[in-house]
Image: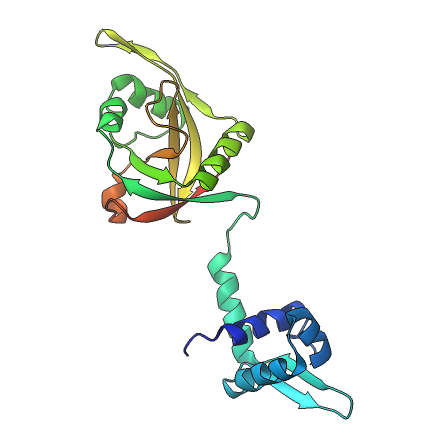
Length: 220
């Protein structure tokens, strides 16, 4: 079926008014949808034609109820969002190539050892870099204020000192659990996320520069 925004709006509004279990008066539906009776009548006719609603008319009012086809649609929507934690923030970031510093630092023995001890995994020697928009960058700032990070301790290696790294849990595109790292000595601004995983995230997800992914900001 070709997408019809008015029918989708009607189905959701009916569900909110209990139309899965009982007939809903057109007057109540019209009020919720902020639509005139004439406009609502057209939408109901269209939805009924497509098999998404059933309607009946009495002497006083028209009544509308969701059909089994609508219930199947709503069930599929529910299944697609199961597992979402509604209090969590989600940001979008554009993939870009860095200067190779992530690969250098994540290949240091001290950081590899620290990751194993602190978060229990050996990360791939490299980071997936994401550039955020202004609004999402501030979501990250607020997230870091609220969530206590795990900290990879600093160390001395090959004649130089390497600083501490804060680690936060994230989920990429709702599927892949990973970590966002924030070195205390950081080269990027607040609008960049550096993500690490046991595997090469670019290869695992088939990502190229310019593509956009969603990152759920989680807590330990």
